[in-house]
Image 1 (cartoon, rainbow, N blue to C red):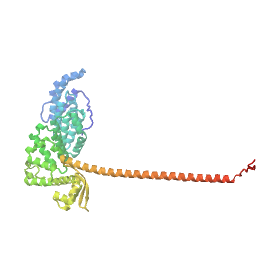
Image 2: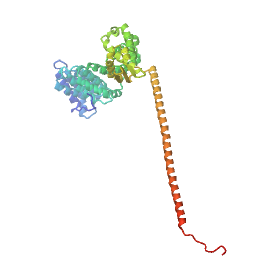
Image 3: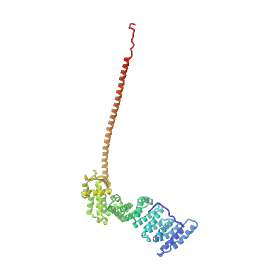
Image 4: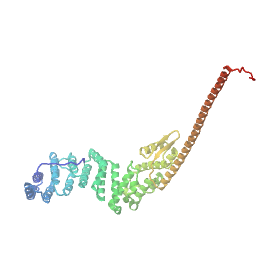
Length: 466
């Protein structure tokens, strides 16, 4: 699989390596009676050999002429023995890197490697992937040639049927594909081609959900002016039918936004109507539709064998809508059974299946025969849903205002009680101080009175007349 960029180094001059590879190609072509590659390139190599001997800059145009001959004959390398396959291709890749424009040769090499390796039916895909990975990693990350090499890698993996190779590819796609697309600056047509190649490889590996994701990516790369073309109509039908029939795909928003899918409104009316039911309607609408429009009559019967799967998915989506539109967040079993047209004993099974699908969260109460909804997914989000959100936010706001009122009242009561306690404590402290001061004063007075009584008095012995 693609890894960090590296360099391929092989010893020898350009002319020597070309002669060596040409001689090897002659050996492989001997059984087919082809012309001698050495004879074809000999006149072209002579001027280049002189330049090498004189230390002059090589004539890149002359090199390209030599490489044209070699690359044209290189298809025979797919017949090379296993032990010689990788060295021979590595030499060819190294020589191509010496040209003025490697891109003109790499596309041909990728074409060869995407074909079966006839010398090794068992290990051929692994050998081809090894060379393609080498080519990919020797190119600069921003080199658009990586796009063509990567297409070849995807094609080989799809043809090989190797689960290990596909999983390695998928990991690279998840981690690196957005960066690669940004670096390669692909136009819409090339981007669509890449996503479709990935989708084909995913389908071959049985990964239908990943395949669908890239089919949707391919739809988004379609120009609005080309949305109703035959090829794009077929792609839209493929994307839509895979989404409807897949048991794990419940979001149809990206499909509804596609110009190519919108074009089905006029070309495939019944299929588009079915999309609208799955996007926003309920089981009742689906059953009414099926009663008047059998699946076998829709777009050539592509959904003819999907009746049970579609009805199952419609029940899960109906329960999702029911949960998301219930103001009380409490769904009685009877209401669920009626909406899904199932027996009361089957309600819990359908609720559990909807929870497993990630559409709702909640708790089953067998005692009260109700489903307590904690979370539910909106299937569509428009004016009606905004109104519901607004209403719930208003209720939430009123509840918060009530809580804040209670908190405010309690804070005021606490402040009053605290103030009263502080005032009472201060009064008690002041009263105690006053009482103690009064006792001291009385005692002092008594002591002074006692002292006054015990002191001797001076007696005036002279009479008044004196």
